Image (cartoon, rainbow, N blue to C red; front, side, top):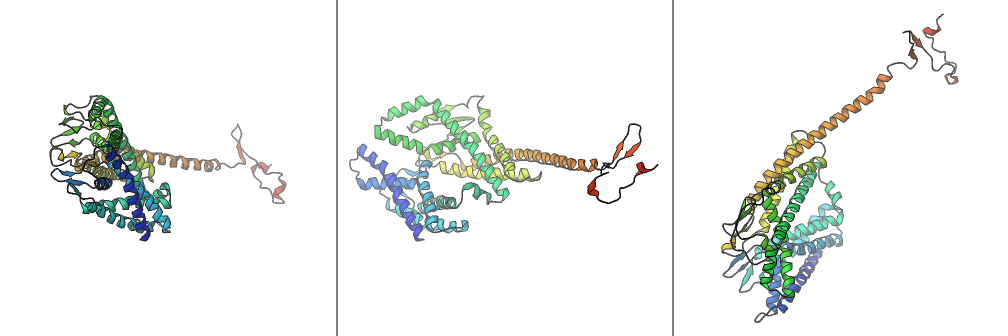
Length: 435
């Protein structure tokens, strides 16, 4: 427990130092009349809490819950390294003991996160202490636990510890998610490239200096994971919203005035028709392609299934993928106050249900077809092996000492005649020895 507490303190101190640096640079570059160093430290603490996906409430403005998922990588990476160190320093040698090491790290880290949320409160904004404790605990358990497990064995070896069926589902879900993430990233990048002129115009309108431009770039980079998840929700079908009574979906988009953030130029305001007709089927086919790829990996990563079991496990792949996408959709959105932007991001339950159906059906059909071909190929090889093993038996059915002449007479020959190894054993007398 002492090792975990030390690691938690190191992660908290190092993370706050990393986050405080850009805040101090922005404070120096911008006019800061009336705001001293305590306000800078409170801002850095709030930014560190945002990295744990802890929202905050502004007095008179409402709750801010649309948080950049890219900032989660900073505490996640530090907790990953802390989990490895706790396992090695604590002498943990068995996988079942990694959970104790993760708890020893997560509990004091969650307590420190809750204390930070309480200490960073001001008359303007405040964070929920309970949410800070919960998010810190979950993040430390997941990141620290994975780091501790990885310290004992590489990923392929850890994956082989799972039962074959569960391992195949994990491989299938990872394959399907890889296809969806790639498609979401490509779709977001293509949309931003198509509206690059509008993005440059928004950036010039902000008139940032060198430090401000750097902070603006970092802010947009931290929101890239959110944009990728929104792209996935777009390809799945439900799309996402950016304000009340708005929608961005393959069937069309209805948006009001957007905040002056350059990356939001990929979402032109107003009423817009759907994408070009040649592109819409391609985008809508992405979740089915992902499900088909997952179903193929499901069959290849597992032993041969029965005909009726393959589609069932394909549906399981769809259910797990839909659950993961629903959680990601919930984490990628949130309110921006109590006004018109109170609803921003995709609907978690819509994305989860629709993606479960699309990926599950495609994975079930593909897994059933691939498993049928595998069973058919295995049966054909088994028949060939049986026929190949029977050929020598049929060939030996005719004695090697018998040959046929052209006139139809059967002549019996003794191939071992005169062989000295036969000793004094009498030779077998056949019909050819008759007078």
